[in-house]
Amino acid sequence: KALGAIDVAGATIPAGSSVVLMLAAGNRDPARFAQPDRFDPERNDNQHFGFGGGLHYCVGAPLARIEAEIALVTLCRRLVAPRLLDDPPPYRAGASLRGPKNLGIAIAGIA
Image (cartoon, rainbow, N blue to C red; front, side, top):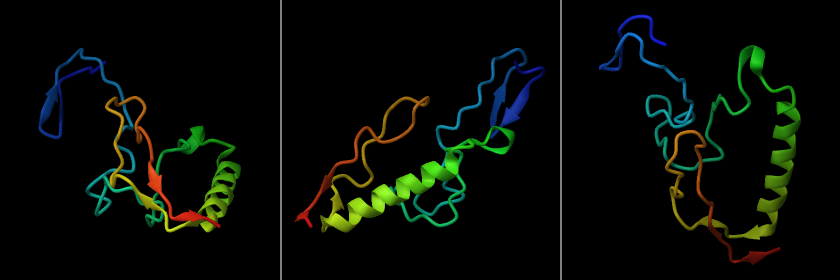
C-alpha cells in the first residue's frame, strides 16, 4: 500500500492505494529499444527480467539459455526461407502473462 500520495509519470497514486509491480512491459521499453514492439531475437544488449534478478535470479537460467539456443539454431538451420506471418505477432491482452498469442511462420520447406 502507498503510505502517502505518490506521483509516478504524471499520475498520482493516492495514499492507501494498493500498488502492484508488473513487469508486463519488460523488453518493450521505447526509451531503450528502437522498435520495442518488433519481435527481434537478435536484439543487442537485452538484459531482460525473464529469469528474475539479483537474489531471485533463476539458478537454471544458464542451462535454459543453452537449451533454447541449441533448439532454435537447429530449427532455423532446417527451415528454408522462414518469415513471420504477422510482424509484430498478435499479443495477449492481459498484463499478467505478456507475450504473443501465437508465433505464426511461413516456410518454403524443411531441409
